[in-house]
Length: 255
Image 1: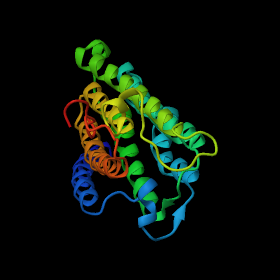
Image 2: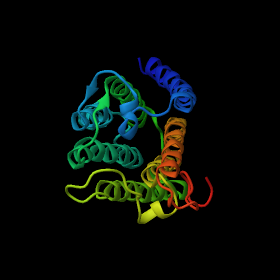
Image 3: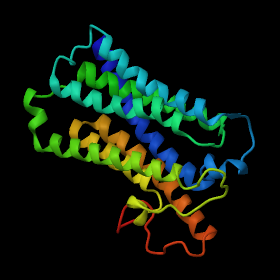
């Protein structure tokens, strides 16, 4: 039974890698369909807050389930518990906190919502089951330079992501409408500082977990967020004549 599930998890790794390629190509061709771009698309929509809550929920529910399941073989080891907690903490914030803080978010296309829900279900299962049932680490892995560096990147990335979201939410004062140029934090260097933070976060997770499962998740994050970031960058350049020309798309000073 365990061997069959391990084979399934291996297959899901390759599937997620393929989906990363599909996301990159698809978003390159048709662009993003949410937020400021949603008006360009037709179809049924889901209000922003319930959409965010429901689409992120599987990635919070899977690790929580593993935490309370007595048969989670590897969660007796400290490295497995810490890594699963890192994954869970992110999705607690995205599922329970982020939706509450949304200010007048635009409804999400039903199609986009369904895709996000399916990905969070797949990836939540992949990461949670691998860490709770199959990943083998030495007890002192939490003192290894790879883990410590990865954990630091994960923490810094999460702080950047949350802080950048805060800047975006507070661009407009009460009663104001329209769009503004984000300023402050890493927005002084890139157009999508929130995406940069999330990318750093999952690259750190991949390094700390030292697993193909973590790497493929970071790869998917890069493929999905870079195309969106480039679309945002181009939109800012076209929308604002005074948009800082020195800002990069996603990675400070580089890209």
